Image (cartoon, rainbow, N blue to C red; front, side, top):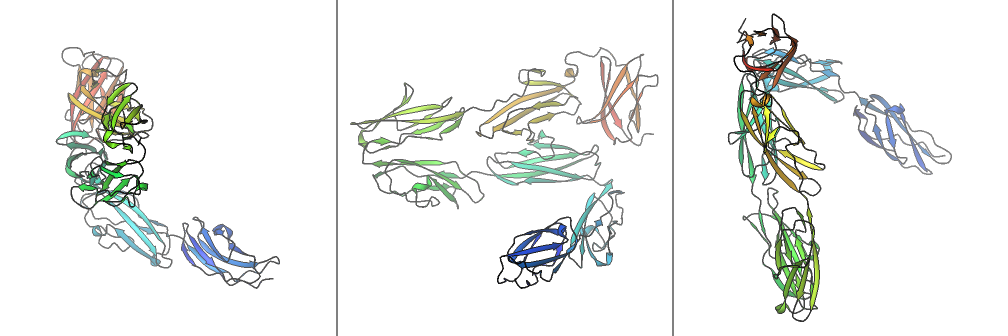
Length: 600
């Protein structure tokens, strides 16, 4: 029987929540395996049966664990002295309940710890807004803006930490916003996600308006943009009463230009040295293809291996920003040996409407006597060594090469992928030509069902669905576009349309009766309530909708007409200008409503 194993060695202090530790015991003679045991067993799992193992701790366990090991053979073996391991719990803490205060208020943050507070270390952030951020319940300075405070508590004995947050919303705080761009600089052809985070003001619901060159293009909080040049975007945040404006500039780096150098002509089975370049002058990473035919494809001037046939080489360069150039090509014609050709198309896969260049790449024979004939079926296309073509579908191009003595026949295939089909105006959508006709109170929804596709809309949204609305005040014409990219073929279609909002389209051609409206709204301005009455006896339901001037719906009431009219509660509506739409029978009335809490 083996001797008793030595006590395991390894870390003895952990914080709960998972993790692992490595443990070992000394090697023992006459031992075939080692049996490791945890007490209690639910503390974790032992991986391994040698003299070194890893213990994976259960993330839900906290307490004292004993780890012991027995060196075993066919006769078994005694356990070692156990190693005591402490899995300390994280402190149970609370930063308090979210609260709302008035501008300029000083409050005590209600931090708490469900353990001996004397053993804890405290740190609140942002520390600059607190008189003493290192105590459990600190006092704030006078608060101006809505703030999220974070409490971090560290157990001074175990070193285990916990964090919690509390939101202090400041009523009457001025509306402010922080604008971001991820990233702030892009290569031409790339995208950046803009973002705006608002604080203060009437935080019940912010509205966002992004402008490019003074033209509104998005109401998204996080629009995606793809500018082709450095561009400044202006953004406004509206809280129902006030507006905060700021801007951000996205820098666009031009793509570098690769130059693969001049074409070369070399004898059969010899080497050549390429000579690449890039513009503008700077430091670049070079990438030549085909790499297997070069001694070092990352050099600007690599040498080829011994070439036995004509070859096309392409060069791509990457600048210090990570911007990648389009490829540039050069070819090496190989003289000697028998006549042959290695035709290529660059690129060999296209999207519909794109062009490619065909290269004959002849080798051997009598170069002075080369004549070329490119054909698409029986149609002769060219008698030149290179040819640009724009096939409308996948095509096999044939090459006939003659050197005065012999003729070789080769072919090259160019694959043409279709463009995504984009339908912005469906068959049941009210429209005229390429313009969707909508009521000023409508939300226009456009859904595209292209599979395996990526979307970028004119408002910076990236889902397959676009929703548009307007202020509800009057005529509004919006120009929209979408780029749909097939993620399998990378073919992209850009489609555009117009959306015309006006009151005429609210009934789609059925006009309201001529003359004055029978509807009266009072008081106007209104305080906490407004009454809608009809001057004529009216029966049936009446639908009343309250809109903000940017088209957002705040309230809806459906009720039966009565002698006293129909009331609309405005207690939760901020001061400002709104629009009431009243629909009763075949009559639709739109009334401007001013809400002012100073009105009794």
